[in-house]
Picture 1 (cartoon, rainbow, N blue to C red):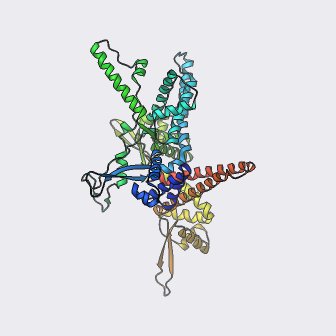
Picture 2 (cartoon, helix red, strand yellow):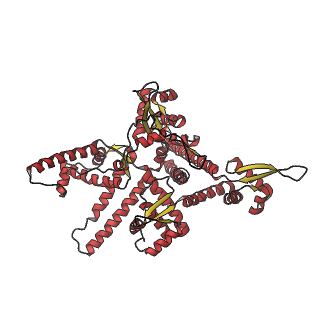
Picture 3 (cartoon, one colour):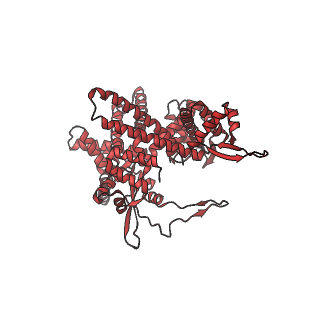
Length: 548
């Protein structure tokens, strides 16, 4: 279950994108958790047909996952449950960031191809590629990715029709050529894990099955590990294996023959076998293009944003080269999961990624190893290969501290910032008089500021009675509980994002009512609010998406 401000923010995003009815169904799922269709109808007082349509919209745009469980009192009947995917709803605020990530990656590949082409021209190579072709390929890939961002789940056939409808009229030969080029661009996005096949639509979960995991106790501790919840089991059951999830669309038998990759045999038996294989291949291609649904892979895109934020922090603290090396480590990491704090890669993969970075090709091996030591990477050996592991917790914590200190300074001023920083660095209970003494703040003002911070749930307080005197006096001790404080900050971030989205929605409604001479000023205000929302979203990434 998510907090009140977070749920309102998610419902507001859905309302601005799909309308109030869909937002009402989404808000019901966020408030009450996983529900059946009948339960949603009862909670929302909506018609069953309207609820079904709203759920279809939410599923189409990856905001709801359906799964089935056994019906109570029956062994052969099931009931479908629906759960809201909060993180995917929040990701709808980040479409511009995601599109920018893919554009930057495609632009980098275009630059690499241009460099190869220039080298080929200098070498008088007649097989060098056309520079305009790489730019057109980049634009095709952007159009495909943008289509999935806007429409949620689509087949490749639908993406092709969408692309053709935006261009000029094409005959059959031109359409097939265009389809072939789009398939190559699309497979590139799949290969880079920006696009994936959609999860299973309605996996079956049996909570009472004997195969379900039971609570286990860690050896040597009193901690009992609880089994995954029903929702977590549904996610795991719906998720495809990596080999299937990122399986590319194969070429048809005609294209394979044109490329010279087909197997041409003169024997009659081999020829019949080859024709059968061609029919099977064409069937696989038809299914992959017309029946398989595809969607944007949010996990990969969030991982790219995490790489960018961590690299910027390292660059500001340790220099440009350190930031480049950190980017190379994170990109070379094979398990690119957003919640993982430790990334690992072999030295060879790190060096390969560095060659594609600006200034990376000029770094010597000794210089790279020096930077790896500065980043406190741990070295190990596996199958005669050097593996470097980097713990990102310190970098993420430094990023969070920067955000927190900026927030505290803006809200409580210099005195509040001094007191908060002292409690943050010490991490223990400190008396009021001692805080005033260390921070050079008067005792009365220090106590008032501490009370404000405590009231806003930024710090904790403990009251004890002094010993050794007739008149017992109360002594107040203060400390910062980082875990509890992080929850408070996250709720404040959700609250701020909610206020901004509501103001932006109000401005959009006013656009239809105001005069033309006031429109320019309204657009300027709206742009400022949208930029502020993007900035707040950076904080949201740090405290919500990147934290366990």
